[in-house]
Image 1 (cartoon, helix red, strand yellow):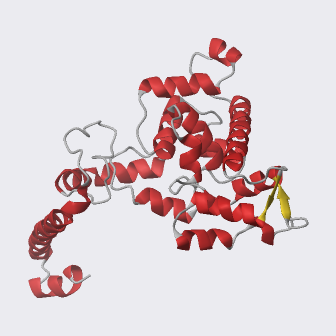
Image 2 (tube, rainbow, N blue to C red):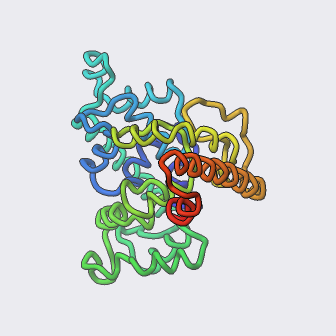
Image 3 (tube, rainbow, N blue to C red):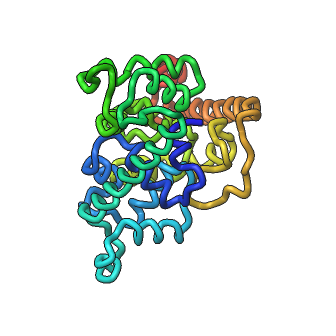
Length: 294
């Protein structure tokens, strides 16, 4: 069992969001707030929160879950006066700090369960037990051992205080769940590995590209299953009931349909190149050796 899985076990999606916001996003409260604020207007709106919940929880939340999360993050006064459901930085900071307190308590419980750090300090043997709990994979454990806090200035007399360990833990993405690392490269690669999506991008440039490529992407999306899909389609139309299988074992169908679409594109590309070449007076051989070859 991984650490974050332990922390979020049997938790409501809103509680899980709080834990993953603290443990799964690189940086402190300001960086995390900026990650949540997709449209960069200084507030976290309903659409911002829904997008971040989808990313961190790896599933699209219901409207009820989003509204519950807004109510949970906002202060009692804001719930009464803010009818638009916008979350300010101050409210988010209070909610984030409360999440840190919860995680500290959960880590204390974990350390007690593993019989480590009974005196409030962690030694090397205790850290090794912690690594074994975080990952059963030998290579992953070895990687984590290489970033041990005991190689830093935090360790004094072969031990590290619980508070220092918690701050160290927050700064090291290797102990966090993949796919939730803000903008670092590993997080982007993992997020991309979730599969193709027809979700509308939050930024202007992304939306322009989305609209230009939509006629092509929509046909490919519904005819070529992405083997990275785990639980059906990943798009905002909620059509997951149409294709709710794990597509990894259908890679041969994906490969076949890719070849079919390449053949279709190649046919029309050659045809249009010939038509355009004839129209402007360029020989077909020249078109083939220049435009088509390029």
